[in-house]
Amino acid sequence: MTEEKKIQKIISPREKHWVGNGFHVSTIFSMHSEEVESISPFLMMDHAAPKYFPPTRKKLGVGEHPHRGFETVTFAIKGEVEHRDSGGGGGTITTGGVQWMTAGSGVVHDEFHSRNFSQKGGDFEMIQLWVNLPSKFKMTSPRYQSLEAADFPVLDGANQEITVKVIAGSFGTVKSPVKTFSPINMYELNGPANAKLEIPLAEGSNTLVFQLSGRSSIEEKLLNKGNLAILSRSGNSLNLELEEESKVMILNGEPLGEPVAAHGPFVMNTRQELMEAFRDFQEGKMGQLVS
Ligand code: MN
Image (cartoon, rainbow, N blue to C red; front, side):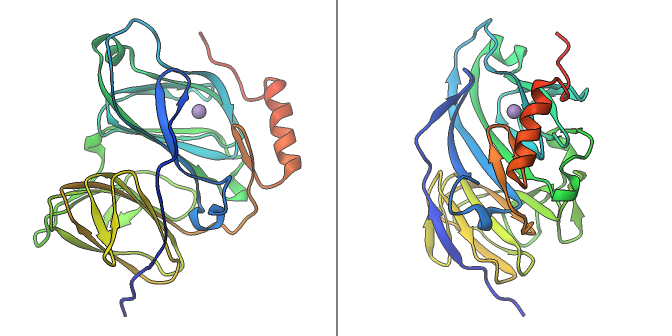
């Protein structure tokens, strides 16, 4: 039987802040809030809304810093992002590409607009999402998955006009090539005004709907550009209707149900593990970037 997931809450974007000198972001949701249980296994999402950067020879972004205990997932919606980490991962993603970095036991990395993009200048838009790791995988070896737009399967269903890019998990029988450590589905939807889509989602899973552009509605409640809807765990489907031409991101996953101890660049289960993370970083155990 189909039962719709209900909107629990709609959040408006917070004031923008700069991350380094390259990413002018609003935090869309965060584990440092009362939503920590209803966003699990996701932790945090920053959105850099479209912004024009003039050509420059400067490196724009964030210099060397560590992470442990989770994954950083970067979506280049417009423009190019360059990354390198002490686990040996690195590369550039261009429009439509995704970098899925598992920090696991710890990496040091930096994140910049690509040199090519900086020199030409242009419109830049990106999302950075933090995905939690289940306790038993927090100290897994670092891993780096780099995907171009063409690596993701796209469903353009015969009887509906909304295309579904399957970034993680699966939609029906269509599977993403991305490897995850807990059950996660991530879809980017694009479609014209008045298009509708029913999305099957697991009973008991958490679901977040982010309106990247345009306007849509769920149960006749409006989602404007920049809004995030947090849906109920109960229910096994989502009915989305586009009020305008839209781009919508859907994040869905099985809640981890484990304590979250987060400080700065580390996300563990206990305070003691956080202190160990700071100590291990200071002792150089998360490696170094080769300059
Ligand atoms: Mn980082």
